[in-house]
Image (cartoon, rainbow, N blue to C red; front, side):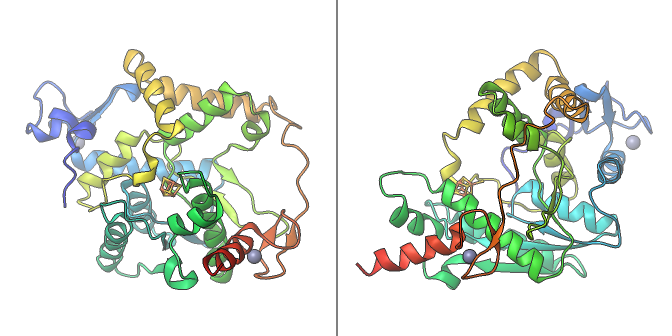
Length: 334
Ligand code: Q46
Ligand code: ZN
Ligand code: ZN
């Protein structure tokens, strides 16, 4: 299935067969993408090579992981995570995928479709191992239904969903002996989070926002975002040029999320002055490195092992994930 919105990523350049005036900076052939923010236009081959090279550079620059370390890629079936898995495999990293079946339908069979995309990708790449955790299969209910039972009155399951994903990702990474968990967050995602945290001056969150979150003593694995400096348009262009099929509909619950409004504001600024988003994010990282938020992280909460599952938790003797399913069990039968 091809993305009917592909035009927004590559624009007329590729769909219209190339615009003669815009040439690849490397070889002079017609360009397929013009990145005004980098003052760089490239043809398909040179764009793919540039994108892979930049990813390698970011991994090294931020000390994310080495080629000896095993990486678990959180794969949603969307363009960013599949592009990330593709690049890491191409660069020769030991990268496996993890797909979490959340049981979201929303009239578009969101979970079923996204699983198919992840499986299709894995089947087409030699040595690509995909772990699949099906929440409804393991716990009896999908995330939206479990959320309904536990956060009565609120319509969105996102807080529960995020917690479930964090728990499962950490568990699979630890159990599988992975050194690091990689997610496909791109610059648009990171800039939107940064914008939200800045609007509310949430200095604790600002102090912790980074391309790498080191593992914690209590057993939380290292988390990295190798695409944090790529615009969404750039990851999408890579996915399209590599012919990777991905699910292009958003999760139905994403509609109306604050982060989407923040992205729209940032897109408006970017249209006026290309490069604004990247500058916003990079200047923040620089300020952070220079100590602008030093000491503002708040003291690290004490980590205990959950009495039910053994995973690290800051929520007393039982983690939020295990408490969720206990509540679900009680309420389902009451
Ligand atoms: S949290 Fe919410 Fe996402 Fe979960 S329910 Fe969908 S929109 S998938 S990133
Ligand atoms: Zn070229
Ligand atoms: Zn637990």
